[in-house]
Image (cartoon, rainbow, N blue to C red):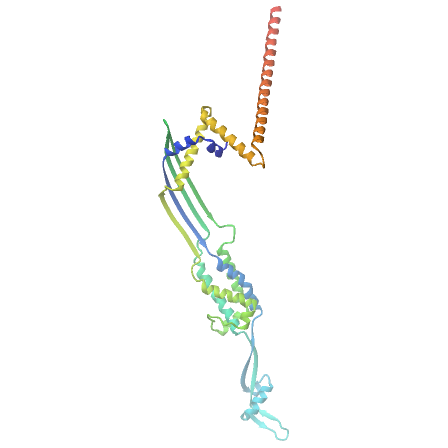
Length: 369
């Protein structure tokens, strides 16, 4: 018999009287200490790093013309713009030959064309990388203990009850202790270390080092919505990370800790009292031979009720059919039990007869001797 059947088949009057007589106390202690770390910012950076790398590998640039008036012998390249400048500044002409039309200037405009990385878009990426470095340094100080949980509960239940002259007592202590730490995935410290290495690679790029040398001023919010920043996928991810870092400056770690010690008089106490009743019924199974006629009747009623419920679940079964089925089964089982008993009696009698016959033969043999 399982626990559920034991409780359901018990005498309702016995259970009711037992529960009414219960006098119990439930003392509860709870200790909880949980530390969580929100690693969303790490994930955000991890997702964006490759797009920043794409930008620095194919940087935005423009041509810078550096104009300088130098001595003619130092001029590296004479361009159309150099001639136009000389025609407007005749004071730079040293000698002019009217016969040949030859012009000898003393100085001339020299134009050097160079590519420059000093664009707003590149300064934006340069500033974002620096912001990432500072953000990581601040967040690293928070990562001391993450993903840990300590949870401890203790229930101390004491109760007494009585049925007639019988007194029943119970003392029960339940203690649970849970301690765990996340170990099934890479820790934030390891992920941060990898991020720092990837950012170090970004700062080793030609674009970043060039902007460092130029001592460019960092860009600040709000970011200008240039065509490149708005339409280029790489810059869209960079802008998303910029906005995220600006709006998530609060601490990423959270701790939930409490200790409670109290006497419970609510649902928990009711369940413990019901459990006390069940434990008493379990103890009573030691005296099964003392089962009363009333309990036998209750058990029989329960069996019949279950059987009828099962039959009623069948479609379109009438009362006459139910009575007929029950009658047939009753006759069959009763005949089977009687047949089994008759067979056992026959075997037993045969064994007795054989034993008696064997004894008689031994007596005859001894007498003849």
